[in-house]
Image (cartoon, rainbow, N blue to C red; front, side, top):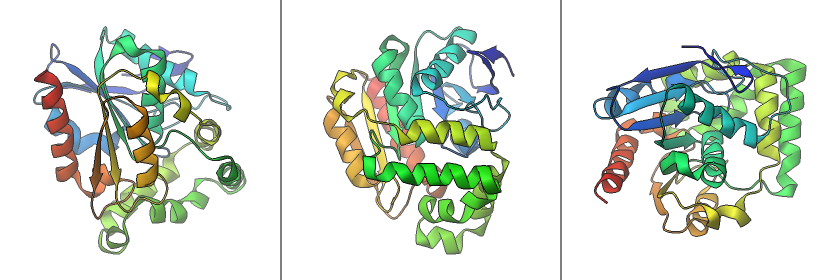
Length: 265
């Protein structure tokens, strides 16, 4: 479905039992909702699984930059409203995890839990120029300028050399991303600074990070874990940023274990 929500045409897919507890899956920068195909098949046996192409990604509209995380979090709330879902679990990968933190701060009554994967709560001032450079390169030369460096950040060395199928799949996602969407999200990410606000998040939270992730490293996950009261932290060995795709079985087990613990409360 492709409703117009919060000022943009957003592509949404819904799987699983209509009356089941809902979980929203939000992909990374320069990805799309197909990131979650395998996890959806697994979770869809028990949950109502809601996936969206984020604004400016996949089949969703690339509205003009700049974007603000308040708006991007409101996109998720608008999707929930459209589907008449009062509360949901939320799983966000990378930029999706940033959206999750904003949801926890701005829309806490809509959440049953948060799963924050391969993400950070803050871009240090000295690193913000990197995002300006990436945006400028994409605007000048298209998304192909982002592929090689992204794959080196996203995949472990073993996967970079031994999983050409996965590397090609990710490269296809990057190349298919609208430059305007990349620029809009990139500017929002560049200015991210939530570390001092994390203590206000009350949703049960799981933080997951790959031990080999250079872009959102273990230290960034540890900072989120320390900042959110009662949060759990899982460090997955031998994988990097795109750990749901690099180690889908192990990642699914981590997610299912956390959700089962929430339900058991």
